Length: 254
Image 1 (cartoon, helix red, strand yellow):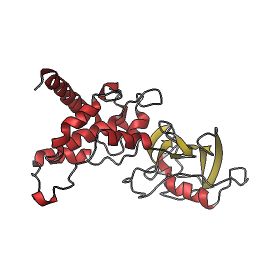
Image 2 (cartoon, rainbow, N blue to C red; image 1 turned 135 degrees about the horizontal axis):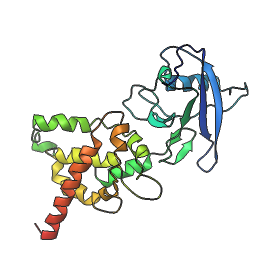
Image 3 (spheres, rainbow, N blue to C red; image 1 turned 120 degrees about the vertical axis):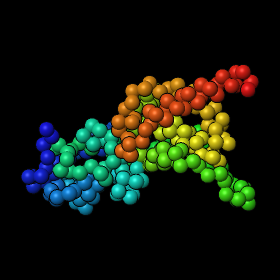
């Protein structure tokens, strides 16, 4: 069983740092006073207020990203004790010490724990993960979505583009162009929308190019790591079926 910090007076951290994208990484150790109900973001704020290492020497404040602090924005994703997750919902009392913080290495590191998520956002652009409604406002309200469809589509809409599923996927790396599970799930979401389905063939075509759905190795790491519990593998299976049907229709000229 993991040792908790409940009875301890301080919290120890080992943080992987990097001064710039082209600089080598290194680690620094920190020790801060323990407070009940502290999360990792609170601990990083404490280090930022008093940036001193465990040996008492001064250092530069650690850089990280965060916005909502309630597991909604997805900005504070990092690797905590070897697992990619949200730092705002990572409670100190539930983590084994020393707590190791690392940036998600699927993405280029900007500085310390700050990463460049451009790969993920470019994937969403590639599959047109939006519903084009410009110029349709004068046509009145669009068709309503059936309640049964709305319920499972709502689960897909919980994606906060945190990047954890891409970090945990062995097929998303700098050696290939696999689009990743998040974008595939968003294709299913927008293709299910009564207005969005008008562009479903464009999205399926995008997933049939290099780096598309064929890059999935079905490791299922994504669905296990998703902080929102989104059924990513179910979406991948559904879109795999849709792209196969779309391919045969194109081949037959239907």
